[in-house]
Amino acid sequence: MYGYFSLALKILSVPEQFANNQRKNIDGLSAKIHGERISDFPCYLIGQLSRNSSVPKSAVSGEEIINHAFSVIKSAMLNVGGRAVMIECRNDKKLIEFYIKNGFSLIDNIPDGETVMIQMIRIITV
View 1 (cartoon, rainbow, N blue to C red):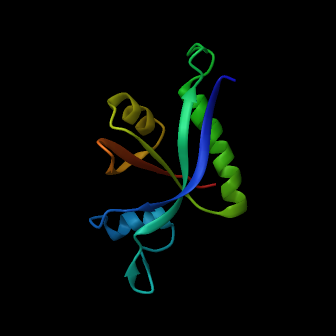
View 2 (cartoon, rainbow, N blue to C red):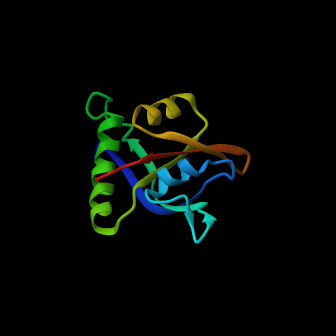
């Protein structure tokens, strides 16, 4: 096994300062439901994404692993729906750069005990 990823469903709660157009972009239809701003969105969560430490980087790249994860997510989207993919990672410059390079945008910082985690999303259309 060269690498792995795990997928789950999770609710993304966006910060109050999110503009309506940002909410609409995540929802795909509207920023409000019954006159109330939408603040919670179902997302596909990439819970883990990693290369096997005994496999050289030249054998499989992080981009190849994340692209495989996206192909599985796109298949689920065709059958179940949805449009947002979320990751939560440590506040590490290399990790954040990797996810930005792969189409993710910063949403929020969330506490996880004494560690601050970064939430990022990517909107996928199939």
